[in-house]
Image (cartoon, rainbow, N blue to C red; front, side, top):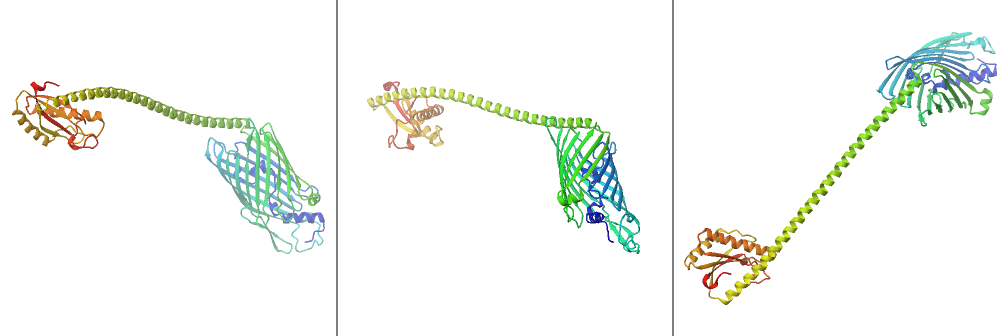
Length: 519
């Protein structure tokens, strides 16, 4: 088939190469995401009716024109949404009419915050018609031509997923999923088919809420469109909105074919009284030469909103945020109070430890004072005992014949306990004392080795003499028994420098009372 009209030839070239334009390429999915993803049907509580119109390449005669009418709504009281879309795409001799009905289910992860996973499916049809009567050809009898007017209908389905968390939306969809074709007959009865190629679309966006009242919106978004055997097409957009009333934005769309059809997009929209939405987008090609040949593109959108008062929703949203902030604040307060209680408990424990230490120090101080007093008494006792010993030594020296030693009782190291062997010695000593005159006096000289300090040794020698005195009285010695502790002052051989086990003893000495008298 030979096209003799140059402009028509250029238009047909685009219609054949831009296979992605089997489906309308609309920028206003940034306002109406249901256009490309059935999972977005009924995502909001409001019912939305949207009309879209796009005029492409205004400098080219018979340039493509697209119109679409869509509706989506939430089924009241459920997590389900429904939608419908009807569109017309006119590209000179090619006219496409399509429609679909959608169902979406939104799985909530939370009832308090916007957090859910949605999936949706659409069933629809595509009617395509070729009107060759409007084409100028060199040979109208060419057998390769189709009939003057050929048309076909195919049924199809689309599916999509979308994840939402606060202002985040992450979606993926497949359009024209059956990948089926329309069959035509040429004038020569040859079969000619037109395949509805699958389209895969992924998108992500996030709405940031800024300002003291959180009424300024900054929403970046990106979209990837993939059609088999064609280059990957990407879009990036940045939208700024205020109080859900006014939006402006800019974006870039890459080329999806061998020609440089990439474009810059500038958009603005306004919502009137929360019910009527009006949007406009202006597109200009990046390639200057191609842009001069084809011209710019213009897209319009008018929407009507029902139910789900935005102000009420906004207030409810703010209430939810405040409730969440209040809950977080209460949790912080509870944690702070717990930390404060724990800290107070630690302080109380430290205070208790300080008080205990102070009481212990006071008790230790009192004990030290008592030990000091006792030490003074012992020192005084040692002094007195030393004096008595000196007197006794002097007395013995002056009266050498007036006493005699009849035996000794030995003790273990540091002990004042009388052993069984010592008990036997005491029994013999008792017999020896019984043979003497009953007027004699029994003197007990208590001794200790030089190990330890002097005070302790004096105390130990005292305990040893008292133990022997009690033992003598217990076994029936009637005589007067006098205790003379000497500490470490009366060592045996070795003197004051060597430890001698024989110094751990009590010497038993008899003396005549009438001549020696009392010490």
